[in-house]
Image (cartoon, rainbow, N blue to C red; front, side, top):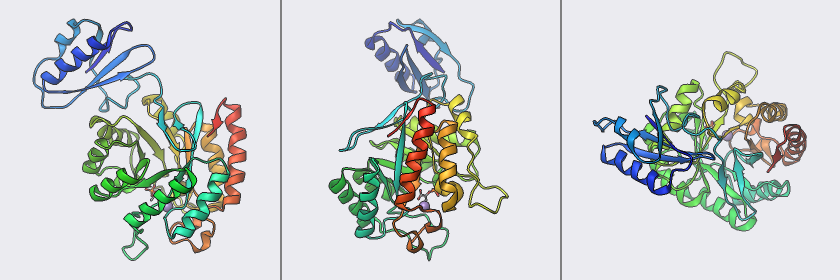
Length: 342
Ligand code: PEP
Ligand code: MN
């Protein structure tokens, strides 16, 4: 059920409706929009009838929500959500007219490596730096990341360069630490349906970048975001990172058609990761151009100063000089769409 408040409804009236919803055993999610506030209702412990809410002061209408996802739906919030990440260099916004850029190595390998890449990334005007401290690798014998000391290096990168930090959490333990050290909590493709981790991320105080599961349907992707939001964290950025198909010339197939499909159904911003989406360095630039052209709200790009010696994902990592070229080209495309590159 969705309660739509009248445009002139007061904060007090919204509060009164929320209180009633909670009394009935549900969770209320007020979503202020440009024209009016809608209140999403979640929870399955409540038994009482919600129809009486229609008679509360300030309520315009109560709409039954038939879709499996509620809070992520555009029915709840017609305007696209703008997720804002404050950094010492200025804010990065995902979901507005700006296109948010996140760049950095797949994994934090050494302090020198992280600082070298961060310095070059910053020179392009970037404000958000990515790097993995917890790496979910296919083989247990591959480099697994440095854990907390990797997070510490990223905290030092933030201190030195002012860049905000985006990094992945793979379980509850790492999420506690990532929440402490980072500015954005990334949930990777392999954990998109780790529901207990999604709920933990939903209780975190930092925005979440949620990657699409490599075999996830659109509904499954949106339901994963619903898990995070249902716990009260509404700052969710979706990320298309490629799905499994039969093609063998790329690591994954970047499903760019999901961008307009998501935008039709959901108010959440969606970014594209052309690095994991292709797995091939020479395809990162053309797919970045395409992603911006199709309407992505941002890009997540793996950049390494010495990709051939990278401890993970070297084949898909581009050089800083190529990242400069990428920015130049996507900026030109963004301009056509009336957007700017952050
Ligand atoms: C990553 O961004 O480094 C990563 C492991 O991505 P994914 O979860 O998309 O494979
Ligand atoms: Mn990677």
